[in-house]
Image 1: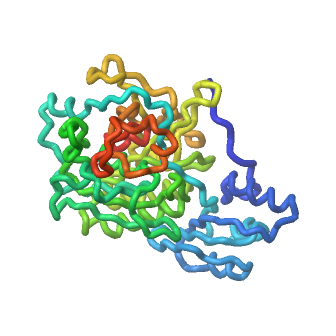
Image 2 (image 1 turned 90 degrees about the vertical axis):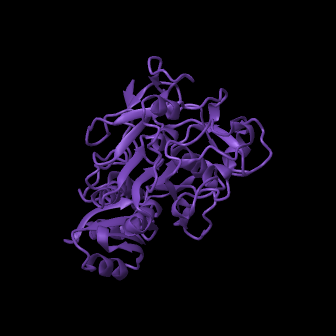
Image 3 (image 1 turned 30 degrees about the horizontal axis):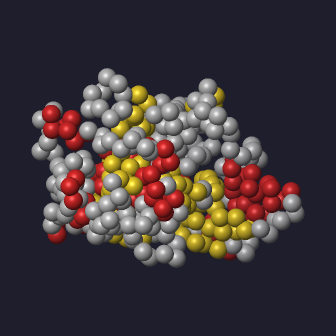
Length: 390
């Protein structure tokens, strides 16, 4: 067992995140002070003093979120330390990479989670998500997949928007988002001989498809923040009650300054339940258990952070264990007890987006070789699968 290693070096300025300073100092040591770095600036207010400084040093603003007091900028590495010294600046962070939290490559036994059956046996089968909007911030959703649209009416039809830079498509070339959406609100029908066997937990809920990850399943924190901002602004219009973030990344920052966490907190304060995957950093390449590997925004105490359980294909909980890959707490910097709970995440059945990258690279994930792209099913492992079940 071990604690995950630190990211970056100690910063000379407490407002600069350690991994941002590592990037800046590398540029300075190599005499590349004019090298542009992408920075998320959090300020005490939105009076624009930081932006004037950025422009003065040949930088530019990429995005601005005045409700968050947050701005995404690009400026020379040599100007970062002086920007941090500006009185209005609260913290500087890199625009960190994020990924979907799937651990997809060892699915050989395909079994459903059994959660829907457990709900029915507990007398809770009537809780189907009617009238509730669930925002899925992910790699997109295949809008015409039967599991997503069968039986849906205009009041719970799919809503889609993209925040992937330079790509307005809301479809799912990677395959992660469609699968995640189906676990939350798939109907389980229109699937050939598998009708009714693999429904989502809340099949009558409306899926709000907020694409923030690219065709390779990766993205940036700023793209996710843009998606969160949109969800808050459109909460009333689509009755967005839940936000699912089956994505994240490791961070050396406290949740108190991590930009993704701060955006998630804004959503919670707006009345949206935010559920996030814990991440799949529970063991290293040698199989050694690792602690402190919870991903952002799951490190935030206001977020419901979900780890993955291995159910071994049974409905009984007596044989359930935490999946070895599931990230374990405490959180790295704040030492908070996370995840908050675990849910089935191993070998979970869900909708398969047509010709997606995951199945193309790993054909064993395909289920039964169905030939109709609107009916196909696949299996995935990961805390990404556990989060929408919660």
